[in-house]
Image 1 (cartoon, rainbow, N blue to C red):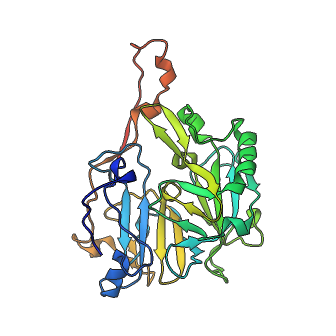
Image 2 (image 1 turned 45 degrees about the vertical axis):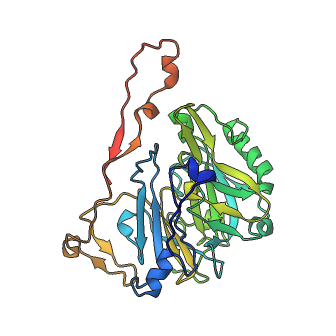
Image 3 (image 1 turned 90 degrees about the vertical axis):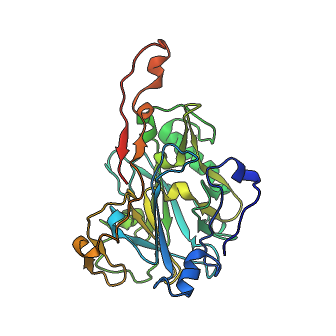
Length: 343
């Protein structure tokens, strides 16, 4: 189950990680081993990824992993469930539609429905979900979708942004970044007969009757530009890490998982998504994921909460100023600010 790495080749030479931990449904993975040995009551885990603007070899405080349960204190929206269509191996979802929403927005719920127009990208469902299917894989940094989407996505992108879509670096101000389109992915719902107490028209993370009257309880996963556009401080460029290159199937990678608490529930055959800051907060009540009962924070005990690390930089000073202001005068002082968040 554990191995010692004695040499490094390929990506492991240059990337931050110097090892890898498999989290699929294979019996050799850590969660399954812990479940088989009775250390976990339920065969499931969650990964909650923050968005980090910088990295170092010392690591970053980038989120939370929960084994055997769900900690809903991290979430800003309800957990909604997509069906895991695989019987073994990778966690695999069924993509039904791809949408592009103008004028950005971080959530699946629009900030302003008049200003943020949603446009549907034509999808060949059989090609999109062919081969291994569309897997949800935290070990893949970027997101890869079917190559047949490239032309129609590019046309809609140009209509919205007046820019050609590409995976080459471009200069953007912070405001321009935030106004780039948000990509929305519709995933087949877990429940064939959904809970009638969850209204799809007002629940963040569900498609709702306006986008799909026939499947309003499907999951709607939002990927904002702050997640799919990767910033290079050395080049001062943003590069899209959303690729249309796959001949069959696809990968919903770590950049699409950012800002979400993602449940990998092999026990019940589902993948859950809840929007989240992924910032651990002490002193808040918990909800037992199995019974649904509220656990008072005062009853949890000191040993239940943990300290995940030092405050983490979420908004760098250079992100709050316009670099172009310095081009005409290299000695000019430009005011800015940094935002630090305790995790």
